[in-house]
Length: 282
Length: 321
Image (cartoon, rainbow over all chains, first blue to last red; front, side, top):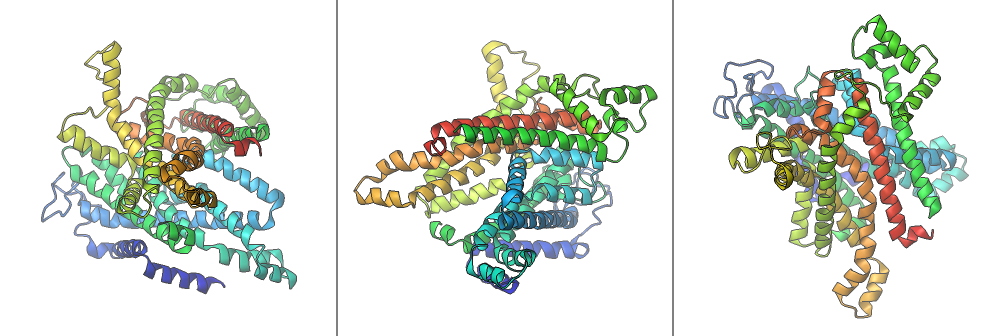
């Protein structure tokens, strides 16, 4: 039991599930694109060109936008922004959710009741508007966007971890750890969280999708970080050229769809591989 | 059942309170002076600052300021819009109608469509059609709503020229009576379709998985053993049990639809709260933004309570527990 086991399960899961294979391949590809952006881009995405809204062709693979920037190169660089925001926000929500859910499910009692109520509140609250308010008031830097998305999206993780902790705390090996006198904190971090983390890993993958979509919506409202290129911003900028330059918004949006879909496929694939009940049903 | 409903109302009330406290804290935590946030100016004039100080008691301790803030809210006073110098509550009330029309139409459509498709696919679980529908549901789930809206505009409005792309009425038409309603309906098609397409997957998956779950329960196997026909088992036993989870999440889903609706409204220049909100962001009109946030939190909480009460009435397991 422990982290190595989790890794092994993850690797064997990827091998056995077609959905996972495709998703992992797409994301690996995207990470490569983000890392090698300067090599893959054909133009400097920040440089304004003379050819405004030029259609896709040999010189500009996916055309240029209203300011003459090369759409393909912008998309390549945008991968960095979207991946970074998605992953950091999802990890923040994963860490918060795991800790709060683990504590609630393991300690029970009034801590659990309070956390469950906070959970319920966050479930009903229109969090996107909260995110929007914070970004509007505190500024739309990438850091702010990542932080606020992470801080408002941990509820699902907390619910999953709580359920895991509640079932794990009754298992023999945990009771054994109690019997040999390990402290509650030790048990929580050594046994409960490592053994119960897998659903949170799957859910965090899905949360990356959610964070990328949220960032895109913020950019579309003009609340994206103005200093970086993001896919949502390209869609937003293309809106004014929808009829004269359909390629600007179309390709940037498609990039978002494929990326989000790939993360969903990984998350859903992991869930299926790990839950025998789901596997039989599908 | 009274206890259950009481608990749900408490959760709803706590949510609204949490939203109020959060928006209050934001004014104080945001960079800059609360007076400058509330007035939308970097350095408000002394008169303006004095007026705000009196209204919100800005020189008082934080807790008593919160109390003043709550008292103002309880009287329906959401503050004054910076860009319009009119009460926020009044401005929102004017814009609420179109937003409700769009979001409720969509909510009902996607509930019905998603549930129907989910049940249909669940009864054929594992078939090619089921797998395809599942894929489609994830595809629409992955689309940013505003992008889907723009693509629909490209296809139906710019290329085929069969539907209007913006607004709620044809301003040059000047229709009245029945023609007016038909005009609104025509304008509703594209934004409604966009929102329905991105909201349906949610209901689809819940309905599908809950039907599959009920069908795998022991009492269904027992009924099969008695020789009862599949359609009778489904109509009499599976449907009723499986439909309930869909109804429960309806209240919560409204929150997501309200969120999605704002962005879609902007794409289609729908005269609701969304485009209004965009202006408020541009003008740094924080009282207006906060008002919109509060009204939305309250609406969602109320919807959730209503749905839960209905749920308690139709599900005996809750009524008698």
